Amino acid sequence: MKLWFKVFISALFLVIAAINATALVVLSNNQHMTITRERSRAVSSHEFICASISNNITYQRMKSEAFMLSKDDIDKVIEHILSQQLEENALAIISDSENNISYYGEEKPDIKTLSEKITSEDNLASIILDCGENTYMFVGSISSFEGKEYKVFTANNITEVYNERNKELFFVQILSVVLAAVIAVILLLLIKLLFRPLGRINKTINKIARGDYSLRVSTSGSEEFQQLANNVNSMAVSVEENYNRIESIAEDRKRFIDSLSHEMKTPLTSILGFADILRIKKNVT
Image 1 (cartoon, helix red, strand yellow):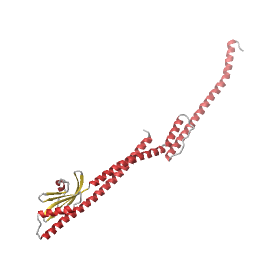
Image 2 (image 1 turned 90 degrees about the vertical axis):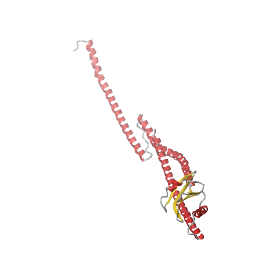
Image 3 (image 1 turned 45 degrees about the horizontal axis):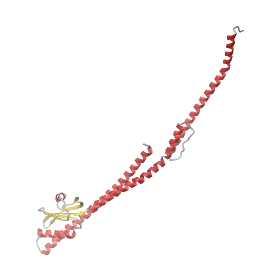
Image 4 (image 1 turned 135 degrees about the vertical axis):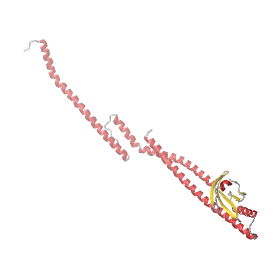
C-alpha cells in the first residue's frame, strides 16, 4: 500500500470520525436540554393540576358547607379538573389508598412501575416510559385530599422529541456520507499535490541509480521535501565524485600498463634479435 493512500485513508477516517463525534455530542446535548425542558414543563403542569384539585375540593367543601367531602365528590372534582386542564395526548392516573385506579387518557401504563418511583409523601419524581407507540414523561407525587392519600400521576406526550432526534440522526448520517465524499475528493487532490515533489524525487533517484549521476533533484516544495532534495543532491554529488575518481584511477592504470608495455617492447626486441644470432652463429666474439 502506497504512502499517499495510507495518509489519505487515515486523514479521511479521522476527519469523518471527528465530524460524527461532534454531531453526536451536539445532538446529545440538545436532547438533554430538550428532555430537561420537557421535565420542567411536566413538573409545573403536574403541580398546577394537583393544586387545582386541592383548591377545587376546598371550594366545593366550603360551598356545600360540609365538614369533609365524600370520596365520590372528590372523584368528581378530580375528573372535572382533569377534563379541563389535561392537555391533548396527555395522561393522568389517580390511585387512592385502597388501590382504586382511575385512568384518564388513551393509554394505560403499568401503575406498579410508576408507584415504585414514589416512596414518600410530598416526594415528586419523574420517569420516561414507552406506552404503545408513544413516549411519555410521567410525573408523580403523593397528595392528600380531604385526609385521604392519593397517588397522582400525570404524563405529557414527548414522542415528537424522540421523533425529532431520529430525524436529526438520519440527517447527520446523510450529511456524513455527503461530507465524506466531498472531503475524500478534497483530501485526495491535496495529498496528490503535497506528494508531487516526492514523486519527482523518486523518479530522479531512479535515474541516478541507473547511472545518470549528473542529474539533480529540484528543491521546490515544503521544507521537508527541500531538505530531502538537498540530501539526495549531496549524495548524487558524492557518488559522481567517487565515480569520476574511480574512472580516473582506472584510466591512469591503463596508461601505466600501456607505457610499461611500450617500454618493455624495445629491449625485448633486441634480446630476441641477439638470441637469434646466437642460435645461428655459435662462435661470437
